[in-house]
Amino acid sequence: MFQIDSFSRVPVYEQIVNQIESFVLTGILPADTQIPSVRNLSVSLSINPNTIQKAYAELDRNGIIYSVPGRGCFITKDAKGILSERKKEKLSGLGELIRELKLAGLSKDVIHNTIDEIYDEKGAMT
Image 1 (cartoon, one colour):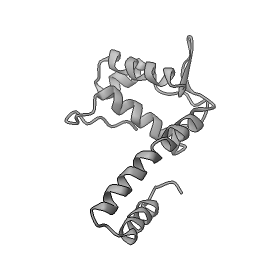
Image 2: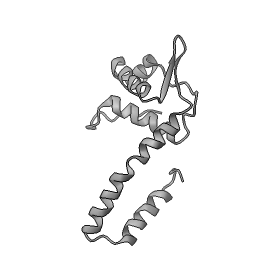
Image 3: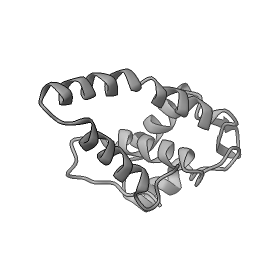
Image 4: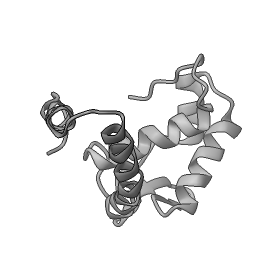
């Protein structure tokens, strides 16, 4: 389920956070689903448990997971909505990128075609 790229410039804990967030957004991890324990994930990925704990602490701080003492960590009911809202905040950055592409001479058709290709990718959410 999880894949860590040890050659990536993205820290391992961020890779875990990003993957869990992606699993929530795509419905792989719906609300109230238990996520792997720190110990189990640490063993399966051969990663220091403190790294896993750091990722889980960030997810908890952001309202994506909650912990039940003695039972583990679970996805919150609001996780998908929280993540969707955070992604929507990136639209202003997208607008700026489109302005830059326009200034660079890219046509609206090229930009639209790229967007269509992304939405048509296999496995992409519509």
